[in-house]
Image (cartoon, rainbow, N blue to C red):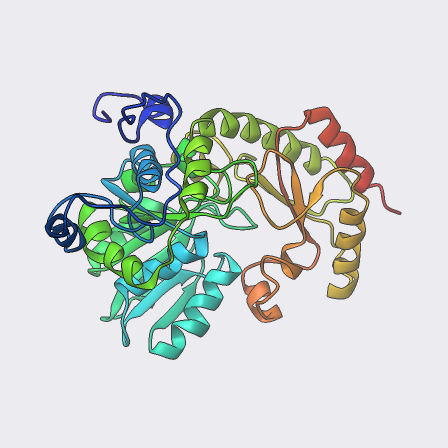
Length: 399
């Protein structure tokens, strides 16, 4: 189906054929296992010699529908779903890395990704070098003969830094390594890393793919060779599986991804412009603003959209403790924004990254990533825009 149809059509049509009942909305298969007509067929299916669903830990029709749809949107051959975004990164590393291998990773990625690479895989003999998200010379200088994988987010959480995906792909492939790009903030509605040379696209389906804050989900999109030959055997053994129900929720969320992202990106730009005019705001981080260091690159890579996440700094530079207290005071004045570290919801969320999403990092690591104690992140939802501006205005009206 996907050869001749637009991605907007694939977002509502790609999946599997309907059952004999002719359902219009995709079926939800809530079953742990599948029966076979005879023992010989069961043996062939378990061995992978014959197509057929076996056990929902690694094969389920609803999950397949979600995987096919997301792969079609990302423009990759295949996709594998996982129980969470971090499970997807765990699967990525377990599938590709062994003791003695080297990883180059942006130091601006999600805090749990840094912890996973540095602490968990570090104790198994995998070395990771953390580099600047935007300084290509650091990526090149970090290359080693044992470098197997480069990992980046674009834009990053929470400072919305944008990397040159095509250039990083060139660096990785020149060294015989693979490039994995976390596309959580942009989603395939805005950005297609595979078309820019990325080998693997990482997703936390918990965010914009679901779109309403309902379920936890993750995925890797890549070639058939990587999905079938590398990642599926690991998932089958290790079991970081996505439940069929959560897969169904994400599947339905993908149907409205494009229109949600358009509306939320438009709102985020207006909010970023509004925040830039407020006297209590020291800095605003948003790729859609011309003041953003990677604005031109973001507009090329992200279909002219800046995304739906805006970060701003309310610190006054007096001390980390005072900046943190001021950020907390601003957040606590909200009357209806959701104080939560999740994002991608139709409800606007607000959080203090230094104490939530990046709270497990050391202060040195946070400072290296540019995450100050005065930084606040807002993920713009679908509320009436003037209400959001009024709410943020009164929140910032501190003495």
